[in-house]
Image (cartoon, one colour):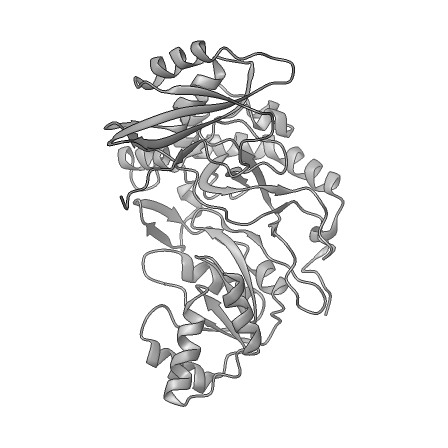
Length: 417
């Protein structure tokens, strides 16, 4: 059995990049012709010019809150779907609410690669404990496993004792579901005296797989890897492992996606290694989302993966980018912090820190100056007040001292006091 799903995973990075951006202008042109909402969003931008990452970065990032507004005005998809391609398919409703269509074809959410990287092979039985109700989670992994040639038990969520009984009968070798529910099943099986030793591998998502939990699974004979997926794109990235099954750092970006990391509250990509918001462009002609901000934080790992796959790696899920915070009764948004910084080119990086001063909220904008520049704290304070309508101090921080955690607004108030 080959170590990789196909040759696409090991092609030269420059070849992959050239392939993506040779296809993107035509894809965008066709998508805008078939999805009026997308055409309205990208109005004034010529798709023929989007031939590299720099040009892509000039397109606006579409946040989910904005997509929800489009959908509310023009339900269900806000004009972002090519409805002619949805015949015979499924539609879903995720929390938000946000509507998502399923594209036609085999493995439309590209989950098979994640199963393959987790060691799953044709002919295995997969116990799929993701939800099949309203949201696409269950179907994302279901379609990928069946594309691998696996048999899927569509278990869904809850009913732990019934799931244990079913698994003891069908004897799956693979678990798919949230990271913690497998432990619930294994513990319940031990309590019931049922044998689930057939489960040897797991592919999990939808929550954090903590090292201690992964180690517990390993001690019980189950090798578990995780993937990062969303309802809009399916599997965005997935873990890989060494030949002995030891997980490698980070997650491999899936083929057929263009992933960027942008500074929260802006449309601007950050340097590799810096934490920011995950922004994704796909080539899904049924649901052509371009520069959709996922709201999730991550960072790019520059070093190539020892597994031999050559695509970009990210550090995995590092939190949420939506840092909108109420201060003195008014909301302050990362976009406002970005607006302050944009008026002061002498500032390289900023972080608004919210604390308590006695019984009152207080905020301070910590800034790092660009190399060789001098920052006028009083001028920045005036801009901060003008943009946010709130008073706050400005503190000049040494270069490189601000944390690399993607936070534009850090709420450090102690709500326990």
